[in-house]
Length: 140
Image: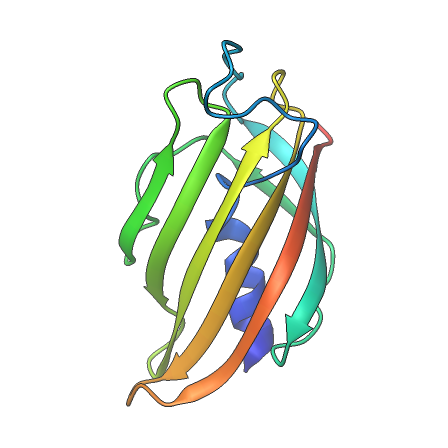
């Protein structure tokens, strides 16, 4: 059941990332748009949701929550950082809430995110919660 959420997570967090070597929101650098195919690698810092396998994803940048979700993905004016706070349906009976922050390299080829994922059933009962580091590397 959680595997579907974790794969969906890979798609919804593609606008998000964070690394000290990347320009920050207050930097004078403007970061390139993130488009193309990326390899996403997930490392669970803590929690109970479990491992997310490396995933290949293709995306274009979006400033709003994915279709069917509520909340926001707010990109900085220089396009280098993103704050995410969304809730999405996972299937007919479950949903997840995701919060995180991150940044991208100036050329848009790599980034890192730190996100927290909470899965709940249709009644709001807790299913699992984990914090993940996500590394993105453009492959095409």
